[in-house]
Amino acid sequence: MLIGDTVKFSDVLFSTGTSLSDMLTILSYMALFLAIFTIPMSLMLSINLTYTQMSKNLEVDIAKTIGLSTFRIYKSALLFTFIVFIFLFFIVSYLSPIANASYRNKLYRLAKTNIQSGLSENTFFKTKKFTIYASSLSPKHDKAYDIFADIENKIIKAKKAEFVDTINGFALKFFDGNLFYKNNNSINSAYFKVYTIVINIPDLTYNFANNPGFMPINKLIKYIKTHPNNADALFELHQMLVLSTSVFILSIIGYVSGLSFYRSGRTFGIIFSMFAFVIFYVLEMFGKSLYASNNAYYYAIWLPNLVLFPIASVVFLKKARG
Image 1 (cartoon, rainbow, N blue to C red):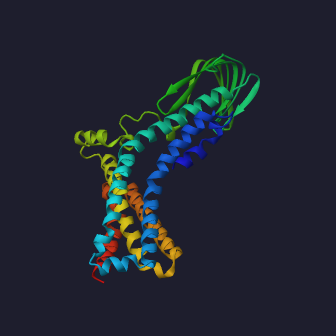
Image 2: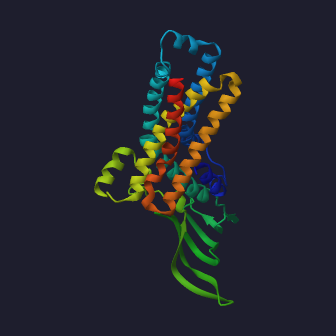
Image 3: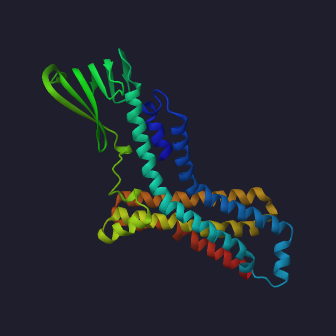
């Protein structure tokens, strides 16, 4: 989603270049969001590799010989998993929503700033949404004079235009000009004193106050108390819990695969673990699609946990009894 936003708005973000600090800021946001997925995967692979090597060196067999149970052998990995869970929960429930709002706000500001800074006197400036030509510009590029614009299949010629912020994007406010538009296979024109066209960038909206998807968990819980039937808020809360608790399921899978497939070498255990990781997030995406089709199914986000946790637990218990 985040990379998709950057690609989607690349024409306005990078039309005239973006500063190094802005690029580093965007990359830092992306790194934080990717950590939500890379941390559980790294945990699972590290546990898998550790117990694969221990099994190959007969350390697991020696531990069982001296009376340690399968759970006792796993205990240190479980403790480490719990530490990772706390760290991941903090990222998912607090840092990520705040960073998501900041990220989109940053993209919006860059899009708007780069459009303004991309304007040059006596030069056509083109994006996917509009084309602008201005004879002269103010020092801050927030005002243009003797302007020609092609926006939404409308041709506008005006003496002046200003950039104005809106909730879902920005507006171009034209003064003292003519509007040309096509209607019923004929070209019509109209004179105006003031004419405003809103350039919507809905995916980069910067009004996040009442959007549960951008609330840290403390604000989200307060919001749910005042809006107990808001499906979006409930979905976001459950999604935080699902993503955070995923480390326990993936940890068990990494452990049992390390004990089960060590004779096949590290490669097979890694492939199996990665396959389980992919299955987990495919099920999560399927749960999201169920919610998207019917908001009453917000609990569908628990699908990967409900499917994989029983399977992992059964295999773990089988190993313990074996």
